[in-house]
Image (cartoon, rainbow, N blue to C red):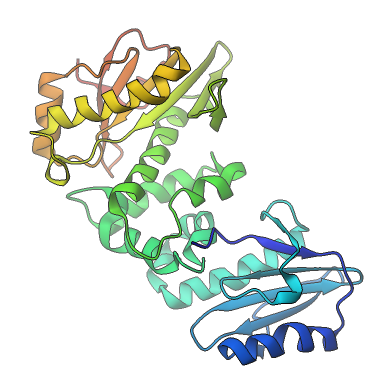
Length: 335
């Protein structure tokens, strides 16, 4: 499976003739490539190239004296196989910005509805334009309301657009957008769980905390977030139960208990305590959530917060144990 889009770096000189011989001609023979004029200009001494394939793939190449960068959701020419890969923030800004403009224009041409959500488009661009995941990731937002049940696409997209506009996780764009995956089929459960991590980030940010994702701990695991303010430094792990209709559990209360138990007996048990467990029930429909908040089941870990977010911004929750986070500004406790 191809990963989210990154750049390949060649520390060599590339003439126009070498580009034709070692990039265009092999791609033309193999997958019907043609060279076309880039949509956008770039300055800083860079010469740019755009290659389009018969199967809809696209590749970009920027070169100047002694170096070059390649990015594409297509076959990589053999002349670039042994080159190192870099993220969007690790290469010259002018090249990154040029590639971003090229690919965003392609994305909005292919899926015009995404143009209404520029921050989502930008954040998930590495997967929206990836080799294997470009169809499935767009379909997840388009057809499955980003994991919200009983919700339309527009209200769900506005919810996440507002979050990404705030820039809370911009620094971690590559790793976090990549969690959506680059599979060629829609895995609604896994993709919804990924969006649950963004809901947790929104909740923490709205409560006033600075957050850092993917915190490595001594057991070799990573917990989802560290939440900090002037007096707080807390680790948070997020789990998202599947809706009862999608699993073998007898009902929503059992779904919450079973999913939380799996997380508690796994990462959190090995971590040895000290983390807050967030149980995100945002995939539950109204009746299922009503049963959970009515019974407020134990989740075999304390402290814990069990909550459900809706696209209108309302988040209901109950807690277990002494939660070392002040969350009242971000959600409404039902207990």
